[in-house]
Length: 153
Image (cartoon, rainbow, N blue to C red):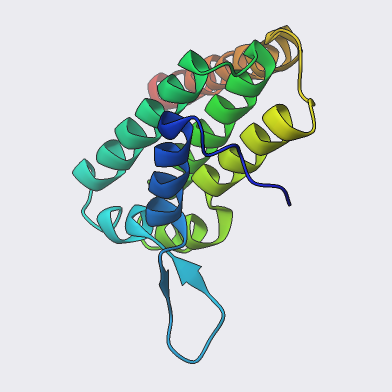
């Protein structure tokens, strides 16, 4: 895959940060790579918030350097998935090793810069995600109602 132009040092720095966060270390005797995201994520609560903040910072830099709304929305979705599923104790840390949201985001950015893909606005991502969230919140409200009816009946 082609490299992002190294002329833009901010993007190059973000690419380096992504490698540190997701694939800097290798488990001896395997091809399994992991980074600081999985290690810091072992600290309950604080670790997951810290990695979310770093990933958010990375997206901010990429947005300032020409990422389209569509790319930024897809990157944010990757980060949200990583944060939500990565916050589950033990299983979330395994998920962090496998999912590698920051590496996925850098792949999106390379495709955007080099292959001129992922153009356009964020609505193609935002609207479906919002619809899913509304359905989930509705289901949660309905389940809560049923639970209270059951408890107080």
